[in-house]
Image (cartoon, rainbow, N blue to C red):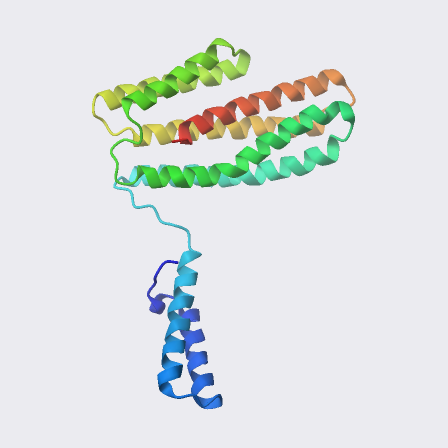
Length: 240
């Protein structure tokens, strides 16, 4: 648990004061016993409240800090929308021939819920470093994207092409000795926005489609597969 200055946490100070009064006035305990207990309650309470606070980034670039905070907020909003989609899908997709679609939606929602924690880890790795990834690591990411491009088509291929272009730009920056952190976070932000857009399309189409029509179910399935593809792109950028 993090140590904290009790003066910043009035509730902890109040709890320690109450313990002191109770011990001295009502329980009539000696000061040598009551004072350490009251102090422990105050310090422990302050440390508890501090541990519940969100971590503040300690980056050396204000623009980078703003961008990573915005990305985290986008991910949190995505979690809420994913949970809504999960609830709606469970209510609407109840027939046996809809099971595959429901499973794909739930997989997407499960992975979206994990994203804020992964971004927190990313933010910690960004601290005190000129570049999150080396040229070789960026090149490995690019190679994976290029491999996926060979077997992709349609909108998924378009998203992969955009990601490949971003990675190529980041590699060039790294080769020139530039700080690639901001460029990497911007790439991540773009992928999350794309993910949110497809998720919204899927949610809207889920409400408007005839769920007894196999053709429309197939269209929903295609959207869910696009969603999974975009998730893989996001995870590629946040993994270590």
